[in-house]
Image: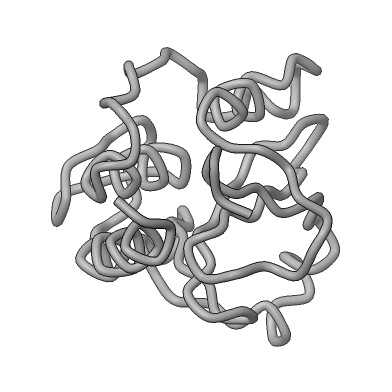
Length: 145
């Protein structure tokens, strides 16, 4: 699969999750998903990664621990890049002590992510100061530039 095909597959898969309610540690389209499980499901559905084994993690772990569990999982499949986000890139945000929220870029500044209060939604980074303030970088699928 070419990079362009992979990015297109990610965008198509991500859109299919819109409206799924938020549910901590869930990964069931239409029923419930959290931000990390959304990213894992979308990239798996797009055919870019094997299914990511579900990890146990408390809903508030990022407030009590400094271990970068979310980051370590993302970095098994993606690398941090120093450039503007491209469609299908991943944005990671620091909430609490660690990187603990993620989103998929649709067409920057538009992203798709799972938020506890809204489920899977589109957001505009330019209109979300809480996201802008916590953005810690851009990651892209290994092998993409």
